Length: 312
Image 1 (cartoon, rainbow, N blue to C red):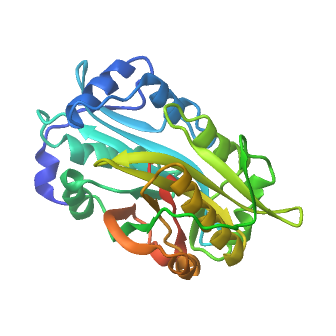
Image 2: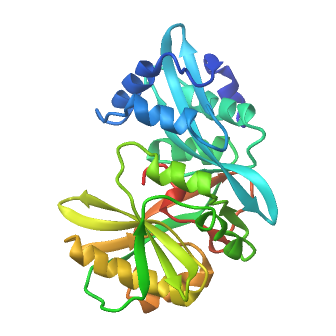
């Protein structure tokens, strides 16, 4: 931790995931996020059902009072050619009555999770200054939406809906990982947990076939914001530019059929930007600042989609 003046801040009792006191997480969540609710089912899915690493949360306590809380959502990944553990840092909150709790929270989280090599964050304006100035988080750029108007597109090939991911779907990531500095391992267990077992979300997944061979998949959901109905492309893997182009055309058409106004996605990989441009997508809407703890990560060399954040 940097800055000697922060060493004089109050210190709170550090703990982990309080699995028997989930109501205290819910209470603090409501205070920190304007009355929003998080269910115990969602907390258990994130902390107890994760097929990679379980119960990776940090809590700070003042007696029986939960002063601050941070949850990591771990996954396996390829980083610079090596298999590692990675995580998204999210559900970060501190009771405003407890001075310095945010600083201690992030420091304690890093101490407790030394086996996780790459920790990604999308800090809000309240935590951005603390994490980048005092806790060695590195701002590496903004991740913004690619957006396009939903529209009928006609032919897009052999694409069909699926209700579960198989080993074949779970092996597609291998065809892309060698091109990228960083990419999550999207195996069968991760994909089914992330999309089909996640409570309170209704994802629709589709695969693309060509001559009997699987070439990719895409996961979507419908979201409404400011009275604008949107089709979100939450995750996708395609083994060729042609298969990704077909999946994008399909999603533009699907968005129109689902009465969405726009279709939007994240994609940082430089290999696929031209495919999005050719499909009519425009880059730059609603950028999110992205930080990485301790590591050097180049956005254009990383394969990031919406599923790399905990809010989609």
